[in-house]
Length: 68
Image 1 (cartoon, rainbow, N blue to C red):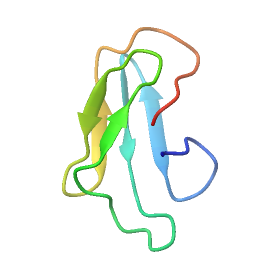
Image 2 (tube, rainbow, N blue to C red):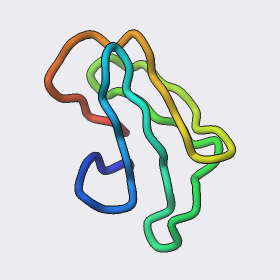
Image 3 (cartoon, rainbow, N blue to C red):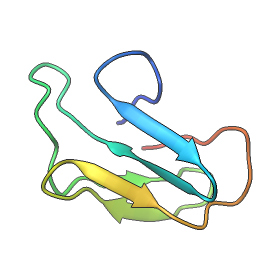
């Protein structure tokens, strides 16, 4: 599970109609490759790349989402 915005080594940026960020392993800080990231409220999913980066586009306007 991805924790969002807790001041740790996981980064999620919400800007415009997309949510993007990087998934890293908590203990080592290394990127998590080919991990599924899902917006719980919409069911929309994407996979992380070789750097742990993900981006979900065309996100409906809301104040908060849960990423799993």
